[in-house]
Image 1 (cartoon, rainbow, N blue to C red):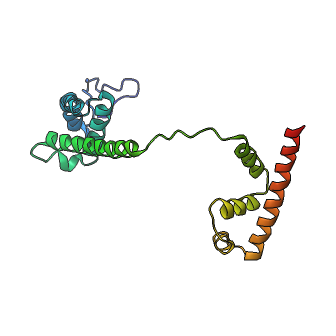
Image 2: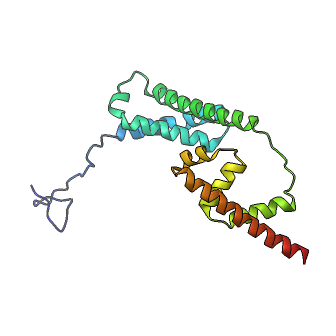
Image 3: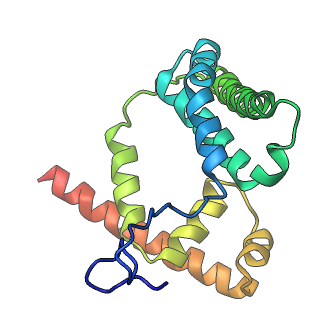
Length: 185
């Protein structure tokens, strides 16, 4: 019999109809999760020493289990599979952290002296000239490249690079002499 519209839990005869939710495919996963999440999180917490990290790793392991639940639930011990995934994730994370830490340990903090006034003037003058002139001057006089090497790197003709160098040096000389005149006043 079809239920009436005004009373959805009864039939046309007035009989009460028991409504049940349709069976959910992931219902057994929910139970599995509830039964295991705390103990696995505690185990990973002991391994990593960080509660938030342990929770994230366990959550990721359970997400992977859910994605493969039809297969994982058939395993003899699905909890062991989730635990192994979580431990593998934690081990990978600890390994990555170790690599980063070793890299950072190799880095040495260098203490450089503050630039003198001439260096500050040069940096200021360099920043005020055209980019291609600045690049050519830096590559030639700081990096020690030849005109040919600069031309190859920049994809320009050697004559163009010589022009950039000439103009860049002239612009630097002008800006440095202007700054020198201001300081002398």
